[in-house]
Length: 361
Image 1 (spheres, one colour):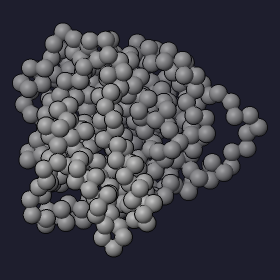
Image 2 (cartoon, helix red, strand yellow):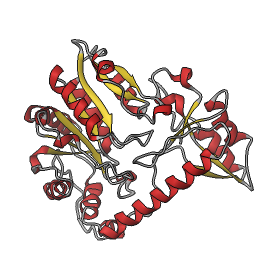
Image 3 (cartoon, helix red, strand yellow):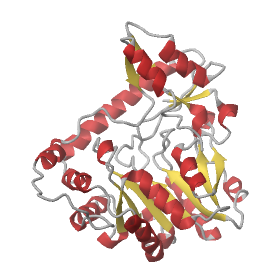
Image 4 (tube, one colour):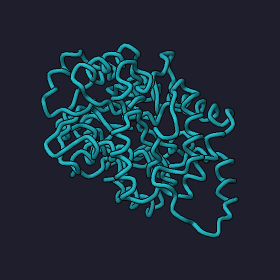
């Protein structure tokens, strides 16, 4: 299994801090915006005398609150179609374990969130990638490239929309193209949509859950970590209308007994957060995006598409080795006692070092 490209340079960052250097962490999707006050208040008000197991599928009131939340995006669900997980990562792992036997294949758009590969390897499965190009803004290639990868061992297509690490937002036409491939080859579409609150383009957000004709072939991966700045409470969700998939995931949920109790109580309180909070977060992120991209484009030799969503940008840099450059920023560079920590882009590609000139921020 590969090391995390997001975390592998942590020892150098820690050493820089010991030398008195302030490190700005641009390497990891950890929001620095305060958690909603209603969530913190709920945490402080917990007065239970026993911190017991919750149901394996999650507390009913939380799942009912999530039904209301998804309805706001035109996604119609019932509580028994939502399985609360220990973060979005567990939802991805459960989906893989339900779908993939050793030797099976999953198609993923590349670059991709590095832990997808780790989880697939844990299942003994193979990740086959559809390469998207920075110079094309990371748009999807033609259908023929997808279908060339489909074999009898192919079980699923995985997308992240808006995308981590590119920030790309799939168009309606692209989502329909993926739907047609899933339907034609009888696959499952796993759609990681944890960044749905952060869409910056005029292109409307289309959830995989609303694709007609494959309603029983979709698994939605979600998390409260990003939209509410609650990475540490470890609450996510696996959502599917497929009863067999849900039943299989429930066996895994029962094996790990219970998702985090305290995290569920905080997450439930967060769902009714004032709209002003989410609007403030949105405004802050779009301002940061515009600032970052504008200034990067002023550096000779740097190329970076404008992200349509999430809070990531991927840039091509005029350096020989992006990993060495990111390390150098921590070991040798500082400006007025400050430096930045970035994630080398090679770790977000199956080919790794062959694409080391990319750098994910």
